[in-house]
Image (cartoon, rainbow, N blue to C red; front, side):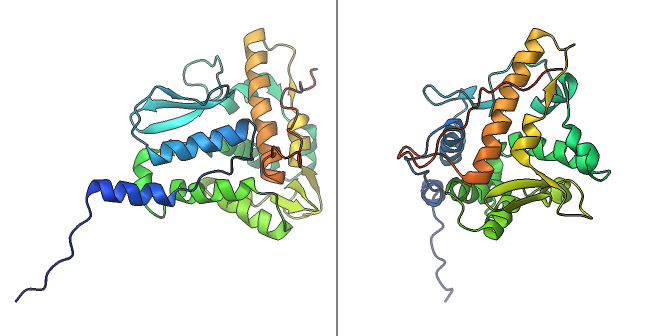
Length: 255
């Protein structure tokens, strides 16, 4: 007599189980990054919305579905077709002069970190069916990173997991939390030679030759980079007044 096979769960049951595993962000958190994380988790719960854009009420940023089931960060910019956020900054700005004090890979790795900030919110819906995918990992890591850090070593390890990508493994190792400050290591051979990540972003300057459209796009992108660096370093601001929201509209210096 053949043993009875257990019944295979229906697609509805599997979907409910997957949705139940995706945590919700604490409602006390606020700000643009908090809205992005909530939207990211919402799409993970229902990845086949098939909406051109997904945005929360009054949120500055959201997501755009460029093709079926592939969601990308949407900063509401007027970018030329095919140009990325980082491509706009690279074209219209000068990178921080402090990077010249680092090793030969410092500038490339700084570029990789900024690119990865926006790609952190890339969401291919098919990856949700793979329990060990980076998307599934981020549904846990993003809410965890929202909490105020309690330990520098643990924060550093958490951020390296959050940035995990085989293409930027060396770059993400340059991010080190120390004394509650997130540093970018300029020289791998001399770890004490470092600069706060937020300070490096503030050193990016817009070139005089940039036109008004490029300038406005860069201001929007740098606002995102600043909020992201504050989030990575300190977690998300809370409504109870423990933290102040960052000044995201501070303008960078110009030549």
